[in-house]
Amino acid sequence: MLQVKKFVFNPFMENTYVLFDETNEGIIIDPGCVEKEEENELTEFIKGNNLVVKHLINTHCHIDHVLGNAFVKRKFNVTLSIHSAEEPMLKAVKTYAPNYGFPQYQASTPDSFLNEGDEIIFGNQKLEILFVPGHSPGHIAFYHLENKILIGGDVLFENSIGRTDLPGGNFDTLINSIHQKFFTLPDDVTVYCGHGSETSIGFEKRTNPFCALSQL
Ligand SMILES: [Zn+2]
Ligand SMILES: [Zn+2]
Image 1 (cartoon, protein in one colour):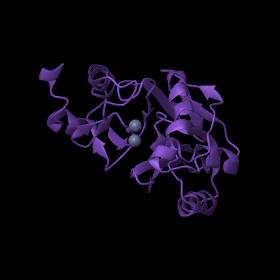
Image 2 (cartoon, rainbow, N blue to C red):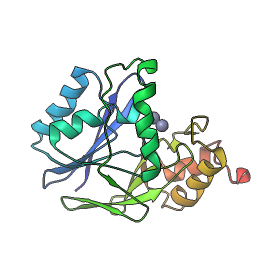
Image 3 (cartoon, rainbow, N blue to C red):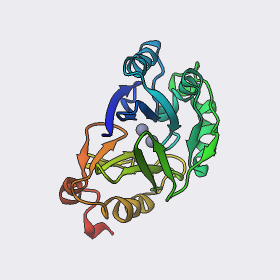
Image 4 (cartoon, helix red, strand yellow):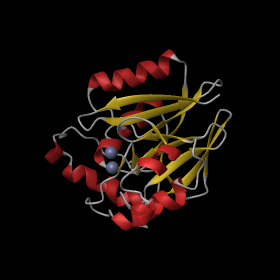
């Protein structure tokens, strides 16, 4: 049975996720830990549950989602996978991190690239990769078909959507991603967002003011 553990890290209140199952294998998605206490909180959870971390993946590479990449790679001896279109975004973080108040930021580099249709396997679990650009050019999401769970990053939030004014962002592309990749999933899929609370595909289809069909 897939378990989802959420941490809220860094001043951007970013959601970091650990997914794991009864085999004790797990993965870390978007580690935003930057303070020592945040790193300890993540480590204690992993150690406390005797988890073996198999993958480190980023939905996209804005600073709030990658602050803990270097720490996680080092601490748990895992490789980092992202979409190739996010590589320039990840590289750029080093240059703007001090301006955002993170002079101590440690850069990380990807070890492999993920594309739509690829699968992430750990324990008895399988996640399918969806390509959902718009908030950033190489944004991907992770769909667990069996449990109807979507780790959606900064694409769709509870009654909101990801911002599109950052480099590589595009409003029309984002809306298309939501309609073509997210709203074609079953209504009872739970969306674990990059910020804020969980929501569901059905709820957002009915109530999200940014995603009304008239805006297609
Ligand atoms: Zn973002
Ligand atoms: Zn974010």
